[in-house]
Image (tube, each protein chain N blue to C red):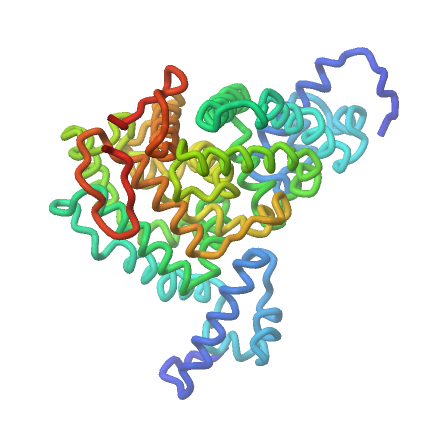
Length: 221
Length: 221
């Protein structure tokens, strides 16, 4: 229960946090004890308390030190006042895949502890959701729809939800999906090509110009 | 704890099942007691035991009597050997919206208790997943892709996952989404138009013929 935070070995703390997150994503926060985290890290429970004091502070660290930077990495480069809607969307999708590539535990943790009612990271994570940027993104989509660049049937406020669903859900549910269809390959490249192709094609309107970047194809003749 | 199943008032049992499902969807199965179900139904706990004997049998009833028919309603009309891929997909989407319209608790229960790791209906629900039909659907998509009717970047085995994500996730997470963006309207018509427009446009290939049905638009010239 020590309070010495300016302590010697910072890597030990990072390692504990990584192990805790992996366990939280795999079995849920409510089903993970400090003893299990200590055990999986090869340290004593006292050591977990030394670094994180309380369970609540451990959850704060998960969100402040892992989730918040991930949200930032995805949203910081967004310039919804200037970017073109398709390129903007494609950038978000690509960074979501980059982030989940580096943090393979993210989709499960997102499903279980953030979007799930009663998820134990929900309120903490909520503070870091870039509400303003998400609103500006929707406005960007609305302008693209008005100009004919985007599919007129899109609902601007729902586009980011669709992006999130398409990128995160298959990664969060890969295990059950492989049971349904043992042939399903969830390698990231295949999933990214599928999602990007579906979104870029699906969002394009009749007045869409040529494909914004390499990963896009367009069917407009 | 009675066993008299050929009992007088069948509606009482249906009503209890409906109330139990609503509570399960709202707060999770693990967080719902028999006493709460009884209380919300205006009966005694003994009555819940009379109709369902055990908690396990109550969960069996949720799956056998509510989820299985929902799966059937969505998949039974699918004729993956003969239907065109876009019309086939659109039919699935439309029936998913019909079913979630009648069973507004379904998206939350699906998220929380089926696809979530450790979901308490997962194994029970798994038996009713129409694995063969889902495989035949993927083959249908693969043929459509090969003929140029569909977007070449689609991964056939991932299409149903994408459909499920687009239709179910926004409905399962409507509450949190409205907090992120208070202007978001989740009325079913808007969501259905958005999802159908995105999918039909997104799945179409360069050789796609005219829109299969009313709700579709195509940008191919």
